[in-house]
Picture (cartoon, rainbow, N blue to C red):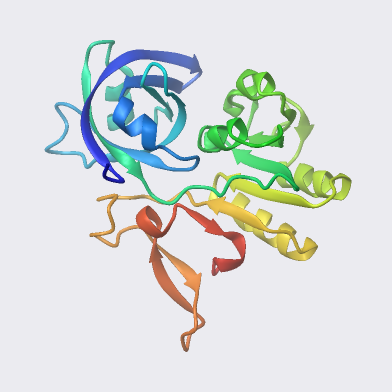
Length: 263
């Protein structure tokens, strides 16, 4: 079986979760069977395919029995606004699963997940497949940006929240919760997904504490298959500058924190 597949996927459900966030469930059994935590699908939007490129969406969840594949998206422009108006029975063209995902947490280490905004969606499958429920730290600008709390709780995860405005949980940055969690956890392993500023802070914290971490980078993508080089990121390398470009879509989106060259 190929490592990525293009399919016509009927929409099963397209429901609003909160504010501008939606969950889209698709019938895509062949992709669901191959999907690993941290991978994504490239979605072609009907009626807009001649004006808007495919859009990457992290795979939130899969149900192998039903063949359902789910993504979470936020209305941020014309493409996602159009997506929110699609109904069950409408069909989307999917390419996936794409990219390199997370390494599953080892049995002898306690997992800590750090998610910013809809980074929660990209890390859910990692928590679902963990040998033991991880600690999950979710951050957002406000309570409206805190997603999937109940889903993580149903997995048995210890959940902590941080909001910039103090409207839910800890008043401050989610990385402050990470520092606290590391201090209380023996032999932790960290995985994170969210805005690049958050990921840079996570990288600095784990480096200071000598901890392994994997980061899923939030980067604009065009082709999704490594052809266009629009999604390059600086990665440490044996070069005169100390870095070289890697493509987020095929070399990532998940990278070791120690590999990233932060400007």
